[in-house]
Length: 451
Image 1 (cartoon, rainbow, N blue to C red):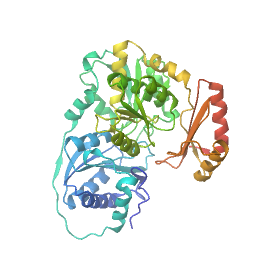
Image 2: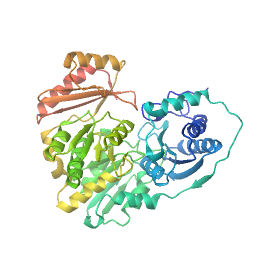
Image 3: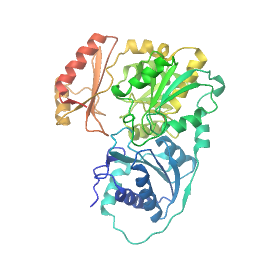
């Protein structure tokens, strides 16, 4: 019997083969076509060792239900989003578990127009249909075609910058043996950058560890390479490169939070008065920048499906999460790990300034803890205890966990939708000592083990 425990808040993700397997992938293909009357479906996959067989089973199920499958092969998640819209397909499915452990895999699903399918917008309905599905013996044998989406995708990515303004800066890129390497090479082929490549070749065995630059222990290799090669910038990606992470010339990891504020400023300079979206984890820096430039701030629950839903509903120009997801209206309202670093390098080229100089003032003004993960026995009890201590009158923000603002500091604690952990983010108004004190204080209440 199939289990649907892998159907999460905004995608499908679980262990192989107990939660994710070929039978589930095949059955999902069958019911996806029926539910969405999908005549054409884009499929893509990441480099994980189980992804090829899962994609084959998914394709078989889609075709058995009568859909034409447009296979774009090894790719990043954002390429499935782009292809679904560009090819005017009825839906798209990416086989990936992004930055999860090696024994995981999963799928991210979208409808026509790259509209995400989340737990609130159809994913749980699909789970129910998967459980109820019974093979009827009918195999409609839909068509199958491989499609090279790269030329159109590359053109779209590069349309976000003035390529003539780019200078021959030196950059270190770390693909983490995920899917980013070959795609970066295509995008950067005609650009003037001097590139140092590390962990560049896709390798599903992940010989250098799971590609998750959010983890402190994974940041050192990129940081050291930037310093060693005297590079102007370091770039690292997660496995399916829907997130990118940046390192300054001195090797310092730049929290995604400050890049949200920086990119908000870039887009408000291009389109004054535009709407800028942010999530409740870390907010003060982004809010100050948006309000100063007379933009319209829009808050959304974190997570790609929720952010995209808000972005479409509110007609947001740009949105970002401190977790390094950056969303662009002109990129099918989707997140991209290739657009942000190009925008940063364009700005560096135009101004002659370093990344550190662009964000140092903001980092000093609103220092933050970075995301701290803890495994706890009962997350709901922890949230209740935090609310009782810090927000007894419940005046805080509860759209995504609990977020409470005080005059000089604020925090957000939320339960992860992709991992069995609780996450803390805390910031202050320029007070690093207070940051350390309050971080320790909240962590002591949370308890649990490091994750």
